[in-house]
Length: 155
Image (tube, rainbow, N blue to C red; front, side, top):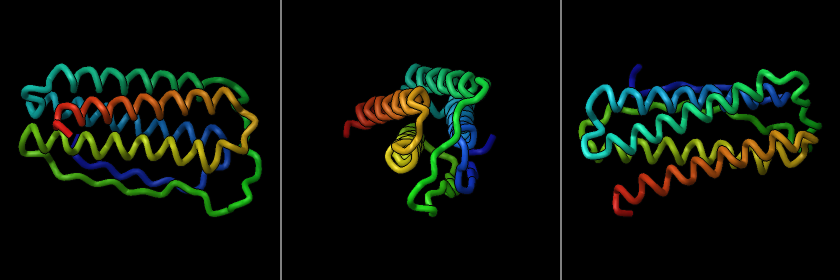
């Protein structure tokens, strides 16, 4: 895996669509942390990167369980028809442990923004409260990751 990822999705029309986008982001995050550990970019932060990678693995399992459930629900019509998730993320390979942490921070902020966007713009109009709870929980986990990384960067 390289230190870049291209994630591009159009307008989600079902809960399954949202979950598949979330799953691709979480798999990318897991691969990112795994690559940092493999490349030795986690010097001084190995335990943190392992913890973050393991957390992303738990997110993958949670989302996969939701996808596997039958009848997860369909989103209600949205008053704004231009809600969509189209984002291409590309990163350079970090050269130092500090750059690795800074890149991890950017990625975690992107994930938190992703969940926040769907929670506020899309899921406020769904009847699937279980999904709303799961995505809020994932958002909170990404926010916790941000705090961990910011502490390491002394921000």
